[in-house]
Image (cartoon, rainbow, N blue to C red):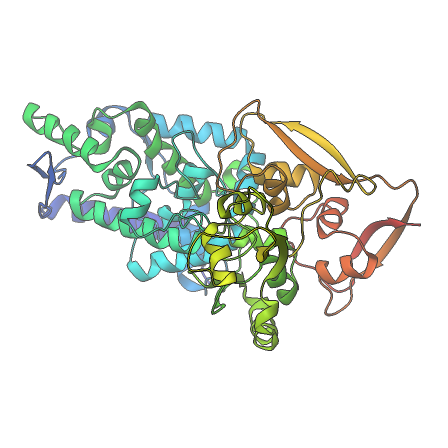
Length: 521
């Protein structure tokens, strides 16, 4: 086996060979492609010489022991960690010379390791799927890090301009790439479908510009903005690489942020960042449900906490999957088989929970739908109504959430709190803060999970009354245990167990592990 010194000598030799090869081999010009912006052809950017910033302000990072060890690890050993696959698939930059803007962004991430750790943890359940799709399409692995810049890997993130999901699609672009947006479902928040749409869009942009940095810049600013900037530089005889273009301020910082994160992931130890491994095996499974299914029922069938199910299926905005599809749920692959078996045994009339409503004088289907947080079409379908006409005294079946929300008529076991929305808040963050179900939270406020929050907005939260006496129980994990099973056994919520034991959404339980529980005495 080669030792580190041998690897260093090997690395220097390879570099010398490459340098001598570059001096004798003439670079062939790239093929130019066309993109129509305002009906004018725009030639893809072609660089025949280093960009001006490299000629004048290059910060060179020489090969070090870490680089050579990484080369040995990732070329000679099977990749067991998704981070290895990402590093091995870098193709946007060689990360040996960093632009000053990239250095500035890198410094920020290095000074905020807690933020990096939070984002990496949020990315964990989705990362293998995204990396695998990039691999299939032969796309640069840096793109797997783009949601860190776009949304911090938060599937419920909504920007001030209405962009949503980890890839931050605005409504119009989402529709162009096939992402449905209905009362029941928003495909921009569906991690699987929005990932496919984002990669389609990026491939299209790369076809326009022939350069990944420009394609990613256009993902942020729009192809028209980047195309016009290229055309201006061409007319002035200037370079047309990303760094030479006059682009909006946000876009000017967009590529440096991505390259800074990519560099950090490439050399985490150098910056004291502890990247916890992400197993290089599938984590998610997409399961067909056949028809509409109550999310609470689905969570029970899968043996999962409902909040965790919503986190994996953020596209669903209501208490059930969409009546007209998609009829799919994303589950941990470890839960999929049991879920399919349980779903196959579930009677059709148990897929949804229902309420009965007696039509009162002055009622209309629209009013009833609003009262019960459903749609007119859902009520008509459930009751086989051919028109909107209803009679006073008639009984209607209303599709309803499997776990109805507390109301003011239930004060004995619930207390009403009010929360004022702060900058950066989301329905998910508020629900986690109060350890309540995000579906319940939006229902209590007569909203949907896709409704935007505004700073200063008052949010109603219902919580159980505090119990006066609690008993501490130290529980030892056994084979076959899950948080859901343990919470049922001790009549506590999964959310509470996580908080008491500092567990994340996807922490793995190990036999012999100790959990602390606080139960009613």
